Length: 113
Image 1: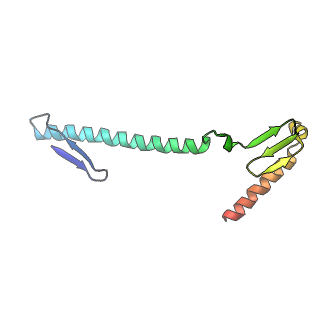
Image 2: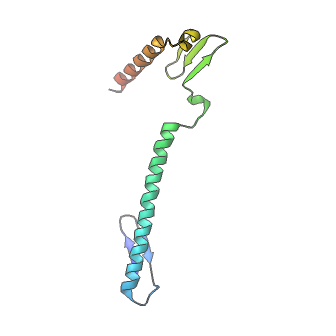
Image 3: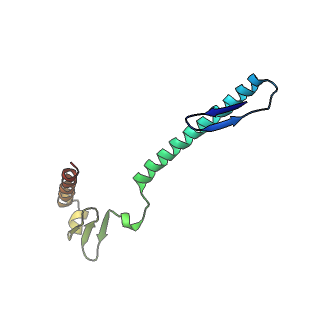
């Protein structure tokens, strides 16, 4: 018995039994198992791709912000902002930083639209 799944091109051959019906049933079970494994592999790869996009590579080039205490500087690498107010920022005065980030996000949305 030889089965071919046309959408995927998977070919299953089975000659274990003397009966063609039993061979067909066995081949169908093997085909179902292979299709299920293929579907699981595709889902796993899709999830891995999403996870990789969220996490990134972890390289130093992906850093978001640098706190340089000797110079009293905070640099946000996403928008190229340097603020020489590290102690104010460490005390919770994030107003200037958040406003700059919001403005950069609005600009990016306008560019995309």
